[in-house]
View 1 (spheres, rainbow, N blue to C red):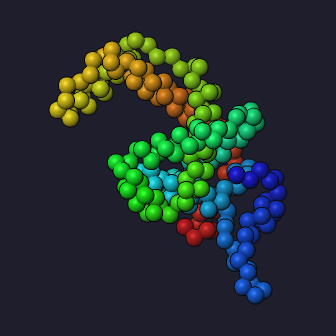
View 2: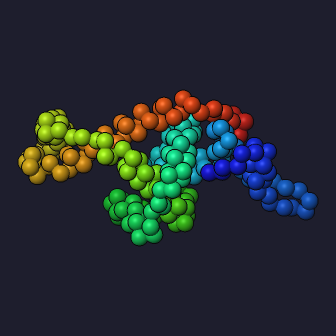
Amino acid sequence: MSRHGSYLLAIALLALASTYGSSQELLDQIAARVDSDIILLSQLRTLSRYQMLVDGKAESDASILDRLVDQLIVRNEADTARFPHPADVEIAQGVEHLEGSFASREEYQARKRQSGLSDKEIRRMVADQLYLTNYLDSRFRPAVQVTVKQVEDFYQEAVVPRAKARSQAPPSLDASREYIQDALVQRGINEQAEIWLKESRSHLHVEKFLKETGK
């Protein structure tokens, strides 16, 4: 995302042109301005296609734009802290994990074609998501505390009912403990991150231009 303080300069940088004789066609537009930063319509479209790849459907443009604002907040904070970007091996593992979440490689390839994303774009999205989630994890995990009672309650309220719904015998509490611990820690990270993001959003001046970009 651009860090150019000049709005006019940012617009100039967006004028990616396709030349036919002396004519030029604007290929990108501004979806939102967040203080001195901008979010491009192309970023919104790319995240929409990535959601289509991962989930088989995409949120509304308005919801995706809100997510991009949140990502901008996290990225700016991480960049200021000089948080390390994921290594190539971690990115490769992330892409492999994404592919492995599908029933078959054929299903993954079909969804990828449907999304319209290239392998390079998918790798870039995975790298970006890893950078943001790794930063949030490092920032909020140390403050998350999980009690024995919380683990037991999660087991009774989530693990056991899910097994019964599948007509399966539930795993033992001991066998589930590590999974439950991880799930509760992640939930705690998400809750604290949302509180922080809500507070951060309240200090930002956000202008949205979805209607001006054809929405």
